[in-house]
Image 1 (cartoon, rainbow, N blue to C red):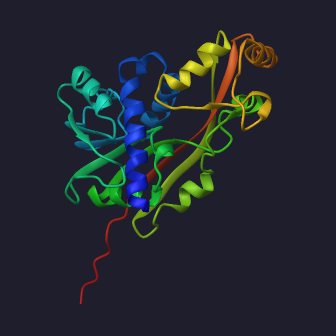
Image 2 (cartoon, rainbow, N blue to C red; image 1 turned 90 degrees about the vertical axis):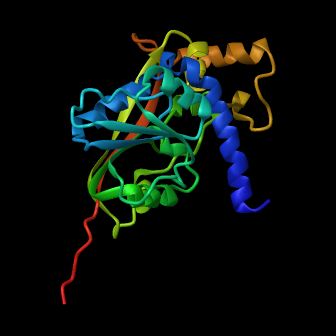
Length: 262
């Protein structure tokens, strides 16, 4: 199987998983809402805004400057939810690595906790630069390294998320000017382990259970589950069981070409 075919198969798997989560996504997107607040604080978007990995949609109505929102997502189920909640948005079902829009047509770009699932981050950033107008800004949040350590301590396999340094290395500095970047720890709390685990499935992500940190064995019964519950309770706080995400927020601007007169 060549790389492009393998990527297509993976795209289909991701799309199906997130489509299945679309209707109940907003019941579990507490981290996304918190990172959205962070992104909005630094944004001054232009007339046409592209939301990359839009999920079920984001309300940009607080920005009077935004007249058109284009919601791009790989999951058709997510875009169907966008159409229900934001009927004026234009929807595009596509991969962030191959954006089916003309060059230099977007004023601003936004992406909230989507690009950690992107296989080729450089291609995605290059594509975003292509469709952005010169001087257009891109505000994005990405789940980064050392997220979900509580799950690792319970013996679950967790995605090896990129470090901030690696994420920044994917920006072509001839195309992009990095204006700001920071990593913030965001913790959310749950009444019990079941709701904590379901919060991940509820937004379309997935984890793999490995009882006692043994890669070849999952949770085999009530005994394993009780052991997990007991370990999880050791981290309980007054707010509940914590789950901590390390969120990288980055603001970048597409460089304006330098014209050389002869």
